[in-house]
Amino acid sequence: MAADLHIHVILNEPVTAEAHFYYPTAKSWMVTRVVTEKELASFFGGSMGSRWFRGFHSVEEETIFDREAWALVTSTPNVWVGEVSWLKAALFEDEEKYVPGPVAKVFDIIDEHLPMIDDALIEQIREALRVENTTSYSVNSEVTNNEVINFLQKHKGLRCFTINW
Image (cartoon, rainbow, N blue to C red; front, side, top):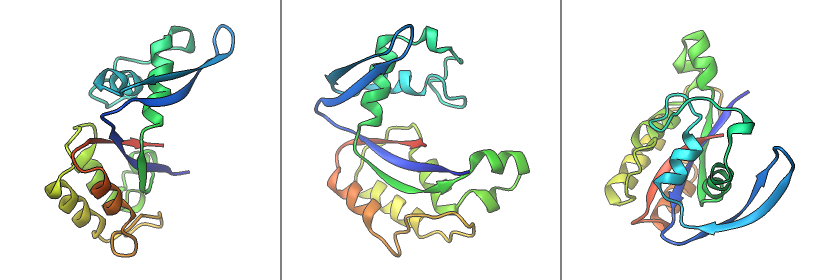
């Protein structure tokens, strides 16, 4: 099973999303606000390796803000970069087989650094997407598809980050 790497952008305007809370009783509500680093910190707080990692917590420990942050961050505009299996790469110590070169390069360039999308970043991503994919995983290659580059050009001037789904 593989994950998908997406590039997300932080809009300078409010995002609207439906948040869900399942404990102690199920409920949902609409939330609208600008996504900030505070929402990103909440979203990535349970992700080991994240600069915002704050430890694992149970569903009982989640706050309304955590659920709203999750809904808002996942609702930001995004584009698919490619498939990747970070877990298999770690377990079998074989990045070349489980991590497509373009995906690894895009992840390294953007990750959680929140870079501003400008011409230089777009060119770096274009070059990353031209790296040969030696795996069996699918990649949104710049050579065959300009979807990623078009997305970045459309969102020039905004900050971006990656999420693995």
